[in-house]
Length: 168
Image (cartoon, rainbow, N blue to C red; front, side, top):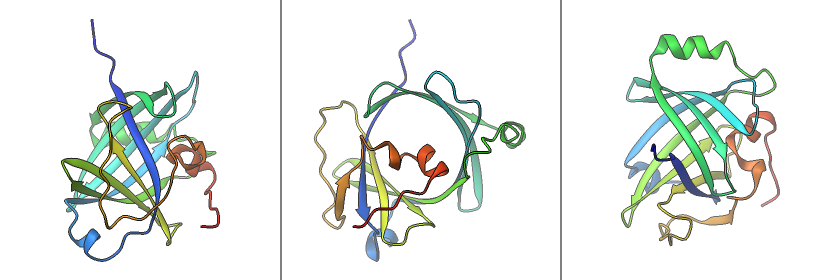
């Protein structure tokens, strides 16, 4: 029997990181993310081009929401030709999401921080967990505004439709 590929993560809205936190990052990449149609039965489908140091990797992902923190995720690496073929199914109701992703290890945990061009005062930080109860040790230089794990307005799929900005 095949194991279900769960993704368990928590997400936080944080103040825009600056200075040494970015320069000391373990990895920085540029991501172009396009949502595909049709979206049916709670399945969100996307393609992604992730570029590091001039080299690009392409992925095709399907996610099925289980609850606010847990999703079933199927992700396959694809070649550029398949990526371009799938782009023909781009959801016209959504904008392409472009972001800089900063990966930062702290206390054996990997934090992924997404910097979006449409915000200059905030970013989204996520951490993948092994269980929903796993405690998190946050990097001291990160200022958390609030947890947004349950706030669907801050998902990339939702931001591709409507850039949500609230007063901080």
